[in-house]
Length: 78
Image 1 (cartoon, rainbow, N blue to C red):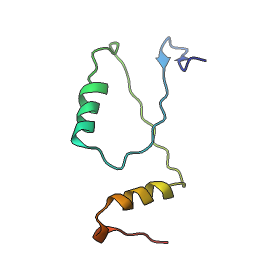
Image 2 (cartoon, rainbow, N blue to C red):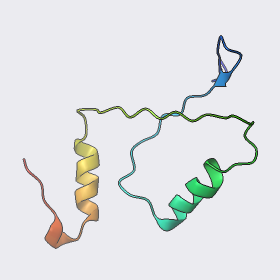
Image 3 (cartoon, helix red, strand yellow):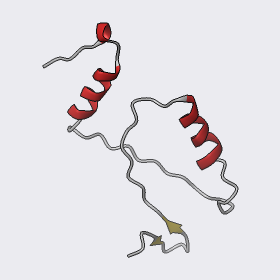
Image 4 (tube, rainbow, N blue to C red):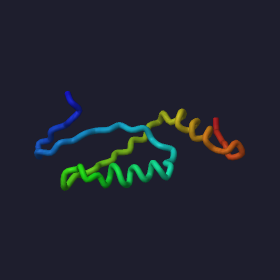
């Protein structure tokens, strides 16, 4: 109901669904490195688990990637 999962081993879990990133800026990398992964607010023995799911629905992401590239380096196979 509130987004938390209370596990049989007396732990609590959260799930975040995130969209893939085509690249990170230096600032974004810094935020991840110093914010999320080095947070002093996390309890001792906190674990992170990442699951990558490969979806066949990638066309919008590929088109965005191609649009971000310099015009002489754009490619698309139809």
